[in-house]
Image (cartoon, rainbow, N blue to C red):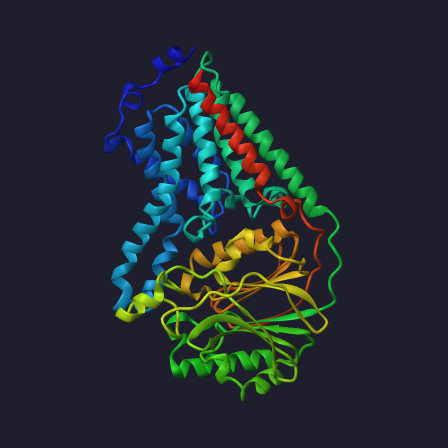
Length: 511
């Protein structure tokens, strides 16, 4: 049977180890179209269909060719998904602008290796073309998970992220982001696994198309049922989220810094009943240690406890922090960001490299920030306890599980002005919604330039402030759902299942 199928495969695909360039351009197109499933495009149906075509192609070439085909497809996936990475270099284009295209190329190539190497490794150890399809799909799913951990992690533009804005995204309450990726790669495998070679070309795919539609429909129905289930009661606390629209190229300018500070104060002081005020990441241009005289004024403007993003100094160390200012103008608690952006907020071996003038790209104080002690839960007054996350930290689902006690909600303070206005802020917002689904906790999100939002425990946006708008919103803090299955068990069951499936494909070669 295998030999019969092999004879139907074009020799140009089947026999070549390193494919010529003319055979790689379809992969370039496939990767880019697949990425349209991610925010802000949201064409989710494109991704499983295109990945199914890619898996079909990869199942019919030798291992060396698998590497090149998947590398090209992965490159275009990440190039489109991460093109916002050029934005930070355009804040000061006269100094850093020349780096922008190199940054995008390197990021896209680095991400592509997370497709090419696992797919190639899986192809090496499988002989049957159907098992090769399964092995490659499993390897890509495992690589998605690994990307959230290795080299400090970067779980952005995961394959499963295409479902966040659909009812299927609710499956993350049981399987997390990895579960959504596994679901997607399962769909992508179906046309190869269910193809009927004895039927005509179109009819041979009909069983797979039917099963794909049925599987998506079942997942959609499960998601709709969860969304329709009774919501927990609100906490009774009103949160005021302030968005000053402090654009990055003006944020640290002395004159504009005063404008943005006055804007924060005025928006915080506007009439309206509220129990807590939230300012975004690095909301002010001064250090916490230098703010002693201003804290009572800020507290008076807020009219309630204030959580603000601010930098602080401890001896020679600097931290990207959140400070809780009580109604009396005293700092009752601080939280230091612990998962920092490599090269953006810190540089590896920073103390050594600082001697030759190399410092972190985004840090405004010292040569880079120091890392905080880790995840924590903050309690202040009669406000339900919350877990603070600063910007980048919210893309890591594992930080939701490393707590000694469960919070009632998540507070994310962020400065998405670094990401531009097209895709980066919306992808970041989507991941905050995914954290809500995974944890069963609402998320209050304060962003300098947007998108600020209140997200309920099922990942739905209850209220928001759009990009490049200065304003505030007073919104009731939603209640939390019971602890989700994913929080209780994490990714371990899925990782074991994927490992067993991968092992089964390897057994085929040994037989």
